[in-house]
Image (cartoon, rainbow, N blue to C red):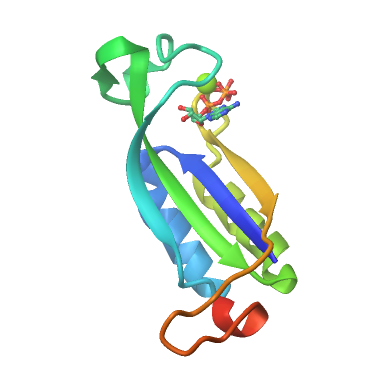
Length: 113
Ligand SMILES: Nc1ncnc2c1ncn2[C@@H]1O[C@H](COP(=O)(O)OP(=O)(O)OP(=O)(O)O)[C@@H](O)[C@H]1O
Ligand SMILES: [Mg+2]
């Protein structure tokens, strides 16, 4: 299992969600966050809303998936979020040790989707 964290531009969220849905990925956590990439939030100000301290508004997606869904998830995020401009975002892929559905006590792959 992997835990995929993606930072994307807020205006790409709808498209990314649509593509994820088409790949059968529906469970996710979405947060509005502030972030800074290597430009320090300065030169990409034209794309977003400048915030205090050179932080820019981004969307953080968190998706836990079984192995079969790792590449489809990455592909959907890449397709939906890549414009080729600075600040398009990043994807982090972490090994996921365990997942439990609290209601039923299911674990691992059974609990994830
Ligand atoms: N190394 C990192 N650690 C934690 N968060 C990061 C890291 N790099 C980027 N982020 C997060 O991802 C967001 C988007 O990053 P961004 O796309 O600007 O990356 P970048 O490395 O500056 O690439 P680019 O040159 O394409 O802009 C940042 O605002 C920040 O929230
Ligand atoms: Mg950047």
